[in-house]
Image (cartoon, rainbow, N blue to C red; front, side):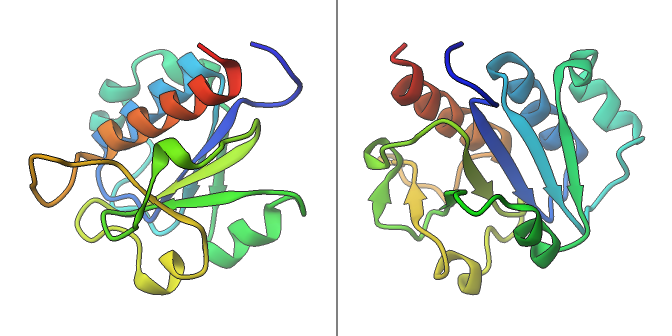
Length: 155
């Protein structure tokens, strides 16, 4: 890994499923990304399902908990770039031009990011040529994070 600071920040807005959050934490661990969770959650961080999904990977993850969207915004450095991921976005994630330290934001599993949030940020989508409503949250976050890492690190 080159450069200073974390490669990325993966941000989950009001996540509902402990297993998905655990899997995103594992992705953060192997990439050197930081994990941000914006309340409310649909589970407790001490749930058995969360512990099972995250296994021993949490030791390598910097976790930030935010009480609300406004608390998350207040914690952002002034130069932060936040990208909202949504099936409603026009721009493909491969065209984003990611940089070290970018924030990749994903919505709750059952409803995705609210329109007011998507409209306030640059929005990206993952291609879904086969159709379907959406990818699983942990899968989508992994695809986006590894593409961002490829762009930043040149893998």
